[in-house]
Image (cartoon, rainbow, N blue to C red; front, top):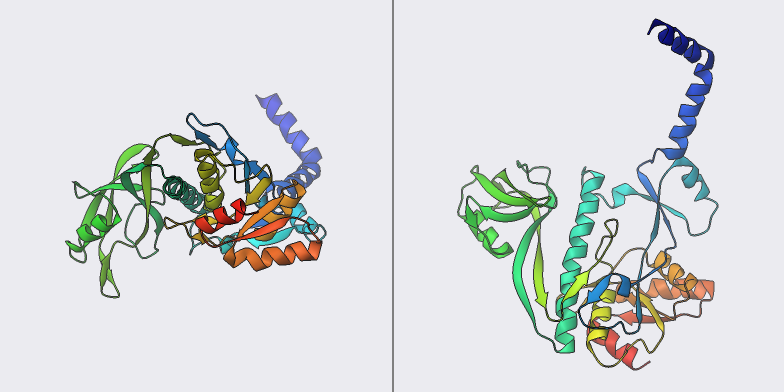
Length: 333
């Protein structure tokens, strides 16, 4: 052991400059800063993410996405040279002082929620029946003032031993307690049931726990639809395109008319299409992957048109306000 120690000591003494240099280079090239680099993305065939039992694929609807790279120093420097590489602070996605992991969890909540919305809107428009099995109450954000061990992503099932069925019922339960009371919650976290607590406090005359909660519906359909998203895919911006894919599979007509249809936009239960971020990167990615049509929400439509004009793209751009409107525009192309 003494010989090994002496050899190691000698090696470090003779090579400490190289070791320090190597460590610095490693840090510069691998340690991400609190930034991301947005770049043009690409297309994901929705037939690779959605399986509809007993139905064959029709048409070619595609998700679009923003390319993202970790903000290491070399990549940050490259972003000043390469067109359409833009630096974005992670703080723009962060609420308060939360951890980055909570941003990712919130994106997964958004994805799960919008998928259920897509089922309802598509099945209603196609004239198919569906059934809402339950309404999950999910912790979307925990305010700094909250005195609780609840975490983002927790699914609340019981309050003080009483089962709660939906967000409104939970709010009613909270009103039964007094300011300063500690309430016990049964939650599902990482597929395990755990007990958490939260103290009720008053804010603007309202009794609260200090949570922003999100409702996710569990929808049963026939035919059954299975979502096969990857663990690193999240967010609500694919809602419209998922709805179109489901709807197009259920009806006899193929509203893609054989074209490559790409697009983006959230979907609400009433069929309203919502605004998204990064439309520039999504449109450029769609063009590079030879899409014929790009669908953009109304609030992003003018920006998409400007990107098209500035780059002299030939792609057709459709403005989306509601799902019904998009379907009609695709049918009448």
